[in-house]
Image 1 (cartoon, rainbow, N blue to C red):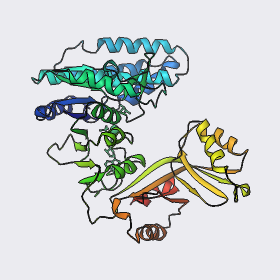
Image 2 (image 1 turned 90 degrees about the vertical axis):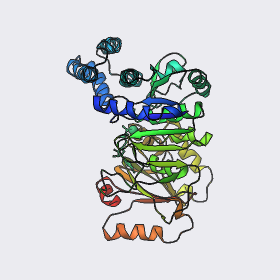
Image 3 (image 1 turned 90 degrees about the horizontal axis):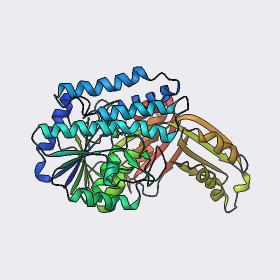
Image 4 (image 1 turned 180 degrees about the vertical axis):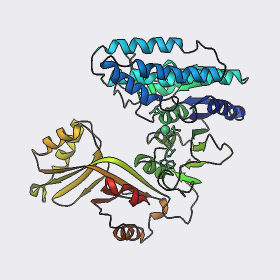
Length: 430
Ligand code: ADP
Ligand code: ASP
Ligand code: MG
């Protein structure tokens, strides 16, 4: 069995969905299990709807969401009423907001409709194209999660649940990406871009022979093709490289996707829905050695840089423990860290927690916060034991007058990570 996950652009309209059906058809011998994202831009609109519903102003956005889906149904000549139930439920959700600020749980409920609707459309189109297919909400197949709304994690039993349900199927399941349910039955999401993660979870659950991520570019590229026109498609990358590339900004793959794949050593392939004959990028445990030292350069914006300074750190023990305890308290992850004897620099995503974290940290040290920074990450297994890569990297930045505010290299030596001002991010990658 293989998992085939199609992203938002890949199911963005009637033509695209017809194309998806053809791609699935040509893989029937490999017993595909399909995972889908919401139709392009629908998740954003659903969030907008939840926010507008608070002021009682959601009508226009509601109609827009409905029209996009009706348009697709019509063009594909599928059952007009296919999504009526979803629209009714979404309408109910709008009413239930009733002047309240939508919380994370409500936002997840709203967002869930995107995948709940797209999965039904794709399954109907597969059936129309002569395949036996059926749409499923992932939670109805046992994808239960923690109750971290907006960023939920699958519970251990989700894997055996999914395996038991999917293995018995004699048809192609078309499963919602991105969403799950708590044990109490409340809908959760796995974080933006999380349909990739669903593909990883389902793939690991059923021990798939391959997990395919079908998207709108030829694979993982040497840089974001939206920044670098002549970015190259990478033939192979290791799990370790892919983790760094995904975590530090390459939207093409949700960073958690490969965790379940790695645990079961399942190859992940990133492919282009609009160029299905391409080989894409293969992500494996170990990859063939190439001459390339650096494979990819990524950037991640909206980063907050936190500098902590304290003479009390000098020769003392337990200081870092106290420091990171503060982040633990606010459930805020720290991405890049660099320390000297009396100071620590750390990055996190810009988030509302930052002010609280800073105020707690002030109890133990001097704190300086700088917002709107960018993390740039230079990645490649070939950098290990190769001298001169950081020299070349930093001299290029120097020549271009780009100031570096923090530098870090992890223990694996497969990446050099540094922080620049947000406005310099694009130039730094170039
Ligand atoms: P999907 O909707 O299929 O999940 P996404 O928009 O989430 O697609 O991810 C694909 C996009 O990721 C590409 O269109 C590209 O602009 C962006 N991207 C950023 N960095 C990279 C990279 N290094 N390689 C490939 N794509 C990248
Ligand atoms: N539809 C969700 C989002 O836009 C999940 C995904 O596309 O992977 O974030
Ligand atoms: Mg995506």
